[in-house]
Amino acid sequence: MYLPKDFAVEDRETLYGLIRKNSFGLLISQVSGQPFATHLPFLLEDGMLVAHMARANPHWQGFADGDEVLCVFQGPHAYVSPSWYTVETAVPTWNYAAVHVYGTPEIVDDPKVAYTDQEKLVYSNEAGFETPWRLGGRDQDFVDGMIRAIVNFRIPITRIEGKFKLSQNRPLEDRERVAEQLKASTDPAAAACGMLMAARR
Image 1 (cartoon, rainbow, N blue to C red):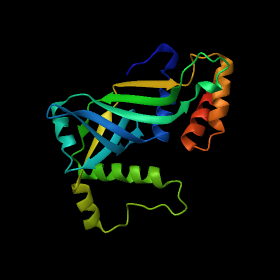
Image 2: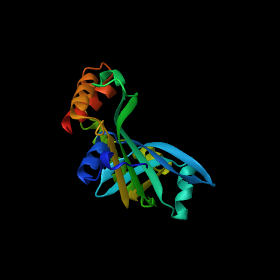
Image 3: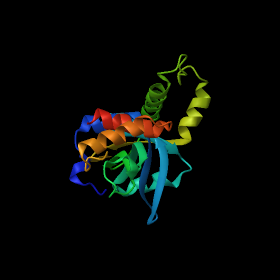
Image 4: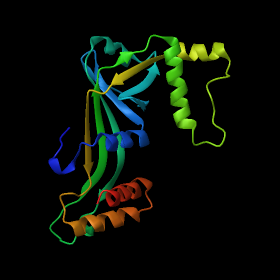
Protein backbone atom coordinates (compact mmCIF):
# COMPACT_ATOMS: atom_id res chain seq x y z
CA MET A 1 0.00 0.00 0.00
CA TYR A 2 0.98 3.62 -0.29
CA LEU A 3 3.00 4.14 2.89
CA PRO A 4 4.51 7.57 3.61
CA LYS A 5 7.29 7.43 6.19
CA ASP A 6 5.37 9.53 8.74
CA PHE A 7 2.57 6.98 8.87
CA ALA A 8 4.55 3.73 8.68
CA VAL A 9 4.52 1.40 11.70
CA GLU A 10 7.06 -1.40 11.73
CA ASP A 11 6.80 -2.72 15.29
CA ARG A 12 5.37 -6.19 14.80
CA GLU A 13 3.74 -6.45 18.22
CA THR A 14 1.86 -3.20 17.57
CA LEU A 15 0.63 -4.57 14.26
CA TYR A 16 -0.28 -7.91 15.80
CA GLY A 17 -2.21 -6.03 18.47
CA LEU A 18 -4.34 -4.30 15.84
CA ILE A 19 -5.02 -7.64 14.14
CA ARG A 20 -6.11 -9.27 17.39
CA LYS A 21 -8.47 -6.39 18.20
CA ASN A 22 -9.84 -6.27 14.64
CA SER A 23 -9.62 -9.91 13.61
CA PHE A 24 -12.43 -9.85 11.06
CA GLY A 25 -10.38 -9.21 7.94
CA LEU A 26 -10.55 -9.19 4.18
CA LEU A 27 -8.73 -11.86 2.13
CA ILE A 28 -7.86 -10.70 -1.40
CA SER A 29 -6.36 -12.66 -4.29
CA GLN A 30 -6.99 -13.67 -7.90
CA VAL A 31 -9.57 -16.24 -8.94
CA SER A 32 -9.71 -17.09 -12.64
CA GLY A 33 -7.73 -13.95 -13.42
CA GLN A 34 -10.12 -11.64 -11.55
CA PRO A 35 -9.73 -9.92 -8.17
CA PHE A 36 -11.67 -11.84 -5.52
CA ALA A 37 -12.29 -10.95 -1.87
CA THR A 38 -13.71 -12.86 1.09
CA HIS A 39 -14.55 -11.39 4.50
CA LEU A 40 -13.35 -13.77 7.20
CA PRO A 41 -12.61 -14.09 10.92
CA PHE A 42 -8.91 -14.76 11.48
CA LEU A 43 -6.90 -16.14 14.36
CA LEU A 44 -3.31 -14.91 14.71
CA GLU A 45 -1.06 -17.64 16.03
CA ASP A 46 2.71 -18.19 15.92
CA GLY A 47 3.38 -15.84 13.03
CA MET A 48 0.54 -17.11 10.89
CA LEU A 49 -3.11 -16.39 10.21
CA VAL A 50 -5.54 -19.25 10.73
CA ALA A 51 -8.91 -19.12 8.95
CA HIS A 52 -11.57 -21.08 7.10
CA MET A 53 -14.24 -20.50 4.50
CA ALA A 54 -17.20 -22.37 3.07
CA ARG A 55 -16.14 -25.19 0.78
CA ALA A 56 -18.67 -23.82 -1.73
CA ASN A 57 -16.67 -20.57 -1.92
CA PRO A 58 -14.45 -20.77 -5.05
CA HIS A 59 -11.83 -18.53 -3.47
CA TRP A 60 -9.85 -21.36 -1.84
CA GLN A 61 -9.45 -23.25 -5.10
CA GLY A 62 -6.94 -20.66 -6.26
CA PHE A 63 -4.66 -21.47 -3.32
CA ALA A 64 -3.23 -24.41 -5.26
CA ASP A 65 -1.49 -21.94 -7.59
CA GLY A 66 0.86 -20.99 -4.75
CA ASP A 67 0.34 -17.27 -5.28
CA GLU A 68 0.70 -14.73 -2.50
CA VAL A 69 -2.51 -13.34 -1.01
CA LEU A 70 -3.28 -10.13 0.85
CA CYS A 71 -5.22 -9.89 4.11
CA VAL A 72 -6.43 -6.46 5.21
CA PHE A 73 -7.27 -5.56 8.80
CA GLN A 74 -8.94 -2.21 9.48
CA GLY A 75 -8.51 -0.52 12.84
CA PRO A 76 -10.16 2.67 14.16
CA HIS A 77 -10.89 5.37 11.59
CA ALA A 78 -12.64 8.73 11.47
CA TYR A 79 -13.33 11.84 9.44
CA VAL A 80 -11.21 14.85 10.44
CA SER A 81 -12.66 18.33 9.95
CA PRO A 82 -10.28 21.18 9.04
CA SER A 83 -12.27 23.36 11.44
CA TRP A 84 -10.41 21.61 14.28
CA TYR A 85 -7.02 22.94 13.16
CA THR A 86 -5.36 26.11 14.33
CA VAL A 87 -5.08 27.44 10.77
CA GLU A 88 -7.73 28.04 8.10
CA THR A 89 -5.65 26.88 5.13
CA ALA A 90 -6.46 23.18 5.49
CA VAL A 91 -8.74 20.56 3.98
CA PRO A 92 -10.71 17.60 5.35
CA THR A 93 -9.03 14.23 5.70
CA TRP A 94 -9.52 10.80 7.22
CA ASN A 95 -7.46 9.28 10.01
CA TYR A 96 -7.14 5.52 10.27
CA ALA A 97 -5.05 2.53 11.21
CA ALA A 98 -4.68 -0.50 8.96
CA VAL A 99 -2.49 -3.56 8.64
CA HIS A 100 -1.77 -5.50 5.43
CA VAL A 101 -0.52 -9.06 5.73
CA TYR A 102 0.95 -11.10 2.88
CA GLY A 103 1.59 -14.82 2.61
CA THR A 104 0.86 -18.00 0.70
CA PRO A 105 -2.11 -20.01 2.01
CA GLU A 106 -1.66 -23.64 3.03
CA ILE A 107 -4.79 -25.80 3.10
CA VAL A 108 -5.22 -27.95 6.21
CA ASP A 109 -6.21 -31.45 5.06
CA ASP A 110 -6.03 -33.18 8.44
CA PRO A 111 -9.55 -33.08 9.96
CA LYS A 112 -8.12 -33.30 13.50
CA VAL A 113 -5.99 -30.21 12.91
CA ALA A 114 -8.97 -28.45 11.31
CA TYR A 115 -11.10 -29.30 14.36
CA THR A 116 -8.42 -27.95 16.71
CA ASP A 117 -8.20 -24.73 14.69
CA GLN A 118 -11.97 -24.30 14.97
CA GLU A 119 -11.83 -24.92 18.71
CA LYS A 120 -9.22 -22.17 19.08
CA LEU A 121 -11.21 -19.74 16.93
CA VAL A 122 -14.37 -20.35 18.95
CA TYR A 123 -12.50 -20.03 22.24
CA SER A 124 -10.87 -16.74 21.21
CA ASN A 125 -14.28 -15.22 20.47
CA GLU A 126 -16.22 -16.76 23.35
CA ALA A 127 -13.63 -16.07 26.07
CA GLY A 128 -15.27 -12.85 27.24
CA PHE A 129 -18.77 -14.31 27.61
CA GLU A 130 -20.20 -15.26 30.98
CA THR A 131 -21.07 -18.75 29.75
CA PRO A 132 -18.74 -19.48 26.82
CA TRP A 133 -20.00 -21.86 24.16
CA ARG A 134 -17.67 -24.75 23.41
CA LEU A 135 -17.29 -26.85 20.28
CA GLY A 136 -16.51 -29.94 22.36
CA GLY A 137 -19.44 -31.96 23.65
CA ARG A 138 -21.60 -31.32 20.60
CA ASP A 139 -23.13 -34.07 18.50
CA GLN A 140 -20.05 -35.46 16.77
CA ASP A 141 -21.80 -36.30 13.50
CA PHE A 142 -23.06 -32.73 13.31
CA VAL A 143 -19.61 -31.29 14.06
CA ASP A 144 -17.92 -33.60 11.55
CA GLY A 145 -20.41 -32.49 8.91
CA MET A 146 -19.67 -28.84 9.61
CA ILE A 147 -15.92 -29.47 9.37
CA ARG A 148 -16.39 -31.18 6.00
CA ALA A 149 -18.41 -28.19 4.76
CA ILE A 150 -15.51 -25.77 5.25
CA VAL A 151 -11.92 -25.44 4.08
CA ASN A 152 -9.42 -24.73 6.82
CA PHE A 153 -6.21 -22.96 5.87
CA ARG A 154 -3.24 -21.16 7.34
CA ILE A 155 -1.24 -18.23 5.98
CA PRO A 156 2.36 -18.01 7.25
CA ILE A 157 3.12 -14.29 7.36
CA THR A 158 5.92 -13.45 4.94
CA ARG A 159 5.41 -9.69 4.91
CA ILE A 160 3.44 -7.22 7.01
CA GLU A 161 2.78 -3.49 6.57
CA GLY A 162 1.22 -1.10 9.06
CA LYS A 163 -0.16 2.34 8.38
CA PHE A 164 -1.33 4.52 11.25
CA LYS A 165 -2.37 7.80 9.62
CA LEU A 166 -3.05 9.86 12.73
CA SER A 167 -2.27 13.46 11.76
CA GLN A 168 1.48 12.99 12.27
CA ASN A 169 2.04 15.49 9.45
CA ARG A 170 0.28 18.22 11.45
CA PRO A 171 1.74 20.39 14.26
CA LEU A 172 1.45 18.98 17.77
CA GLU A 173 -1.32 21.39 18.74
CA ASP A 174 -3.40 20.31 15.76
CA ARG A 175 -2.87 16.64 16.60
CA GLU A 176 -4.00 17.26 20.17
CA ARG A 177 -7.09 19.16 19.04
CA VAL A 178 -8.04 16.40 16.59
CA ALA A 179 -7.56 13.72 19.23
CA GLU A 180 -9.77 15.59 21.70
CA GLN A 181 -12.53 16.12 19.13
CA LEU A 182 -12.51 12.46 18.16
CA LYS A 183 -12.45 11.20 21.75
CA ALA A 184 -15.54 13.29 22.45
CA SER A 185 -17.43 11.82 19.48
CA THR A 186 -20.55 9.71 19.97
CA ASP A 187 -19.32 7.51 17.10
CA PRO A 188 -17.45 4.58 18.70
CA ALA A 189 -15.07 4.26 15.74
CA ALA A 190 -14.17 7.96 15.89
CA ALA A 191 -13.74 7.85 19.68
CA ALA A 192 -11.46 4.80 19.32
CA CYS A 193 -9.43 6.66 16.71
CA GLY A 194 -9.03 9.58 19.12
CA MET A 195 -7.91 7.23 21.88
CA LEU A 196 -5.37 5.67 19.54
CA MET A 197 -4.06 9.13 18.64
CA ALA A 198 -3.71 10.03 22.31
CA ALA A 199 -1.95 6.75 23.10
CA ARG A 200 0.58 7.26 20.30
CA ARG A 201 1.19 10.98 20.94
